[in-house]
Image 1 (cartoon, rainbow, N blue to C red):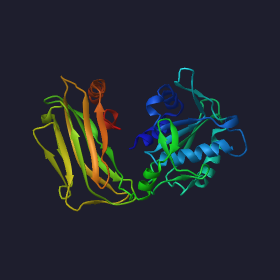
Image 2 (image 1 turned 60 degrees about the horizontal axis):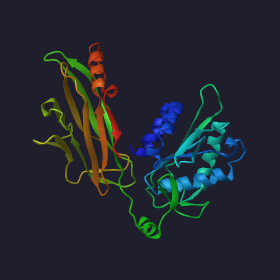
Image 3 (image 1 turned 180 degrees about the vertical axis):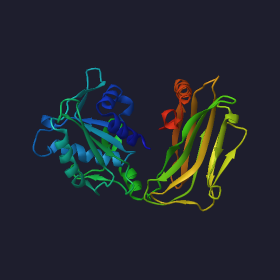
Image 4 (image 1 turned 120 degrees about the horizontal axis):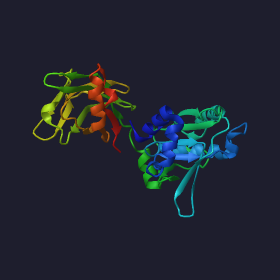
Length: 333
């Protein structure tokens, strides 16, 4: 999952509460997050020219970079000290503004970006007042040009600049790449009374979100100071995947020669079993790297705090539950 898609999912799930957190902590997100206030707070019957221009630049700029999210209904300006200050100015009709944006997306850039997603949510108890969120993934079909500005844009800090000529020339020559992503399959967590362990089990799954075939996917994980004798890694498909362990605190899962990950395909790479002594609960933190030939690797953090593990021990004493309640997989950008 990319940083931009992670932001989009946080807003989709958390709605206004997630938005409040992003507003409070905007600076670290500025490369992937943009706030916009609509003229008259979106009240006009048709999409305002300023909104259309902002949408066009955002799709071009985020698509030509690493993706991003635009939230309509928040005004962001620099104060006298130069710091960015965001304030909420919700749209008067979030659902109606959502419809207007949806209708405009295909007419704002050349080529039209096929991966743009839009959602809206309302202020609790104030329907239809709310916010609209636009997710723009990185383009896999070459550079995207804004029809409003007649330029190719790129995200630079908290703004959209022009793509330099030499960079643009390279983008036009860039071949499509596979886009492998990492997910988890969760299994029941349980207590093993003799000799007294919390057993956490999950599987690593890779999926190709790109438009071209990925070859020989691989996974490596650095486990730090976690005891190797309390960690088991195995594959259910030894014909295509095999696990490598050594004296260093890491493990790798490699695929066989010629193994292909086709667009949209999902492959179960391995299962992991973690044993936590009940008498000595501890945090879990694995630094994971996923890659395929022909594309840059992606990095993830798999973690659970000591408090979450302690809570899992208490909960497991009452019965089994899914390991997703303890273990989290986050992008490490």
